[in-house]
Figure 1 (cartoon, one colour):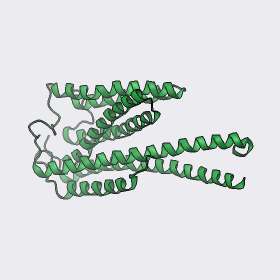
Figure 2 (tube, chains in turn cyan, green):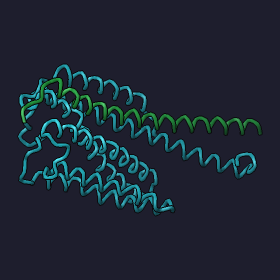
Figure 3 (cartoon, rainbow over the protein chains, first blue to last red):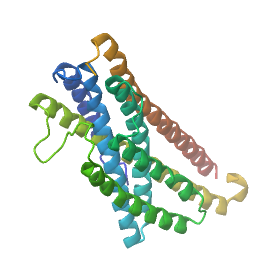
Length: 233
Length: 52
């Protein structure tokens, strides 16, 4: 069901990631201001964009679940949020490393982009205890969907609020004027973003396939146990 | 701050990329272990059905 197209997607992900790495280290020029440290940008920023996109996608899938009542949309939403949290851990660690190399500090509390991402990350960390504290599967799916929609709406609001903030110490990459990236850096960034997006979708489909197979196995075991209780137990 | 020299900047860049790839490798290893467990349980069920 979910495994359709997984193999070509995985191959495309590996090839695009390899291409992105080649562009990062052999094509993109060194940044005049930050030098070699700026290479962190090509992993940190795409990871942040895809993580935030995953949170929003989780909210959209949760809307589909509440509208249709189909539990598969809840599963899709859960896996998207789960993967975005994993990427979020990566964003916070790589961002911290970059901050240390560029600004001399592991964390800067008066930097709106850093703190807002941390707020979004911590907000989504609440999703797990909320979801798994409810035993009834229907209620669990419904409550999780409501949380995913509310938190998903908060992500773009948070993004706009940060853009409106006065302190602009964090570099702007994507803007209405085209940002400040030269052509080679822009191409490298876009390929890195594509690779990160493909990686997210591949791992999302992989986890969905695993969870679907696991659920089918449980159903099969129950049916067999009904037929031959002693054999399966 | 002025740009760090290459030898010093290298360890930060390597650190960031190692963090990213470690996350992915650990995630894929966990998924691999889960899929292997499903495969083992399916084999056991299959043997059980064949014995009937």
